[in-house]
Image (cartoon, rainbow, N blue to C red; front, side):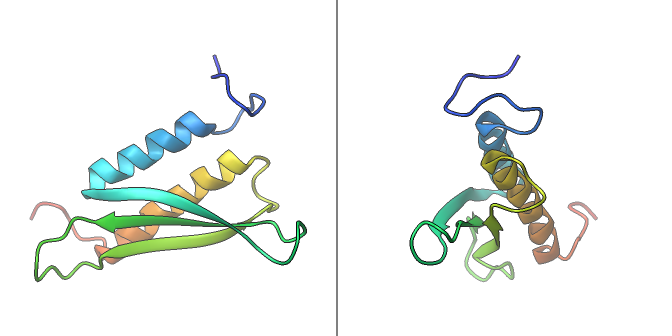
Length: 108
C-alpha cells in the first residue's frame, strides 16, 4: 500500500523512502544526511540541481572529511519522479562515503 501525499503513487521510491534513506545513512555513518534543491538556469527552463550531503560528527584530529556530497540535475533520463531522483542521489552518496572511508573494514 502506497502512502498518500502530494505525488501520485508510483512503483519507485516515494518521499517516505527518501526520509528512511536519510535516517539510515545518518545512523550508519554517524552523521547528518540531507539534500538541497536549487534552481538551475534562468527563468523556469533550467530544471533543478540536487545536492545530497553527509555532515559527519568528527572528533578532533579525524582523518575523515567533514562533508561528503554528490550533485545531479533533474529532470533526467534515468528517473521518472523527483523522489526517485533524490533517492538515487542518496544511494550515490553512500557510495561516495564508502570512498571517503577508503572501503576499510569496520573491524579488523
